[in-house]
Image (cartoon, rainbow, N blue to C red; front, side, top):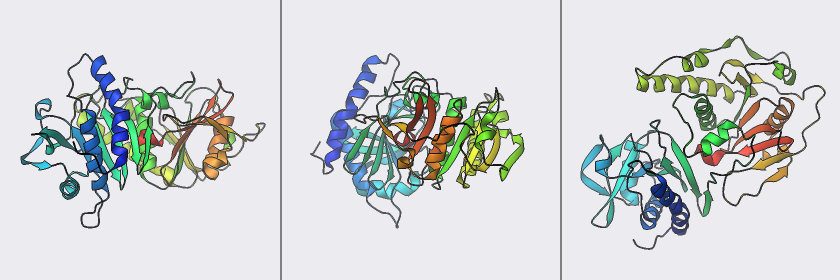
Length: 375
């Protein structure tokens, strides 16, 4: 491989390759051939420069997967492989920009080519996604059949963020965080934690910012004490279509079930675009949206939260919640402090995403910055 024109490519390749090497040694199940550092470097280099190009005013949003033909049962195969280069990728972009489509990359005579496209990938596959100009995410397909990925690194210009999959640390870390970080965690397509992850992704995607409060379905319902009354958009009875759908058996038609679940999740996440907070319980029944959070009577004002980000080199710090964003972050931190059996998810308009939860271990509100896991 020639020396890349994008300096961060070599650094990123050197930092993520050990993960794939450990996976290769630890896995006993058949899996695809994993790329060497030089191949990772070359794919990052080409993807970065392709991300800066335009095709009819549009920047490409593509996903590259390092995979040989023999590891796929079904694929869209090109009669003549396409060279892995910025200009061809830019031209291909409009055809493969829909979510879930991957361009399949493999070497041919010591040169990398795109030999086809696929919607399905085996476990352990190296995946590189172009999300925006100069913004790339390195991923690995999970060891299940849900089509989900483990985020390994985020590259934005010269900045490289490597995900630290051992960053949970504290025993009371929310399951949402541990599932996103866990390489081998239970991750069923309609499991409760995965539904919350999909809600978070959808919240972030609409770009308007929003807050989602998840309260317990059992025990005393004290969350009303943290709301300005009356709630303008209260729902009575609670909207339970998503909860009912999760509780049904959908094994006979899994593809249709995933599509229906996606539509329901998009609908609930869309409520968070309205100013104020959307309130659901841990069964995903919707109680209200556009709700205004107030300090619960008898509880102190939150002045500091513990801030962490699951990336290598990030040093946890204590900060005023207003430093994380505007009033949405401040009110979410107050809610997590006052309602200690609930969590608050906050999406910023700039793409940042924070989960606020009370930590008994630290005796303060913990703010988990997780946008690197949701890209």
